[in-house]
Length: 142
Image 1 (cartoon, one colour):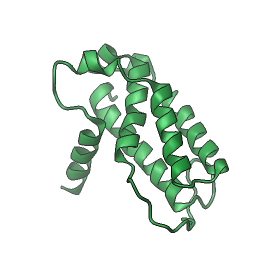
Image 2 (cartoon, rainbow, N blue to C red):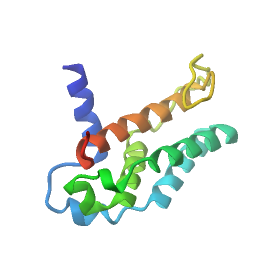
Image 3 (cartoon, rainbow, N blue to C red):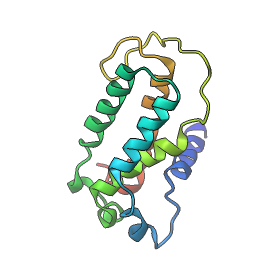
Image 4 (cartoon, rainbow, N blue to C red):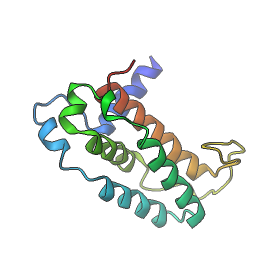
């Protein structure tokens, strides 16, 4: 039950309601624009520059692992560039407008970095949630 609720929320964040216009609309999204929004979000929330660089490089590296050959019909109608951009758009819509003032570290390692900060873990978690939504909706999961 809990996983179903989380999946529903992520699908809503990803903006993938079943409409025939989706294929036409999805090509209007730009990876560069969505990446810039993510960078502005992190800057405006006082993420240290080294954390921003780490997170943006991690996002870039991981979305490049999404292959066009794995897209389903819906994903193919959008194209891999638009699908990758939609993952970032989902992140931008899902990240909270305000962060708790704490900058504490998690004590956990994510994406090869030990003891990431709580705000960085939030970005990483949102990335994985949005990637999961993309896999469900835009890819032929094997």
